[in-house]
Length: 144
Image (cartoon, rainbow, N blue to C red; front, top):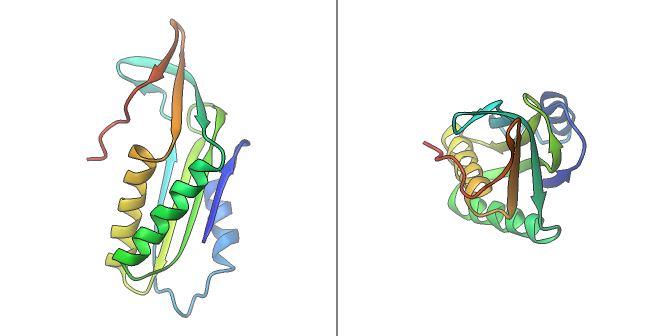
């Protein structure tokens, strides 16, 4: 398991490839991947930048506990979570979430569960920078 909060831009597919070289390929025939990028439009406005804050230490703990919960629910062997904080520009990657397992259903369901944790429970706060000013986002967009 690897959970990392990043302050700099990253290329998610390259990060996935680098991490995957460390994963036991024999024990993992299924891999589910989610990449989230900053969108330029939100709530009818053009968003020029996004600023993400987090609670250091607590954020990582919540994510680790969520992975442990996912491991109890599904037969998963490994998880990679990379999440940006700080200033983010449109189309830049915010999150990479990858789950490895023997069976595809376990990896897909665990991945979806962990995405929802990231959106609803993990202590991240979003401020959008608009042409008209800035605003803090009080709730995340629904996952479905």
